[in-house]
Image (cartoon, rainbow, N blue to C red; front, side, top):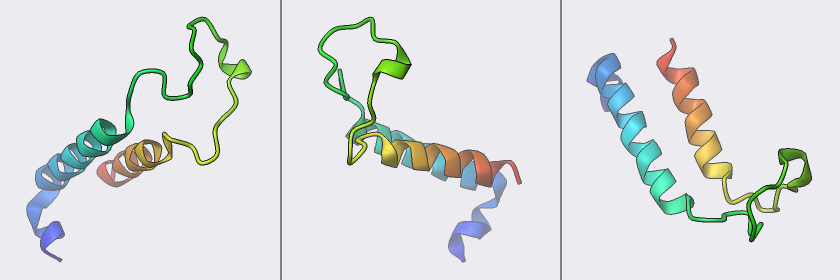
Length: 68
């Protein structure tokens, strides 16, 4: 309930800060272990478990929640 009392700007800032936190824990150089640059996206197989799943979820959630 307290979350909704922050107002739209407060909720947006909360999502933004959480997104930064998730990205700082998740993102790193060569996260898919490609070793060399120059791969086409259709040549990259998504790993299981996907190391970017948490960051993707937070980003989609932020876009969904802040547009309403």
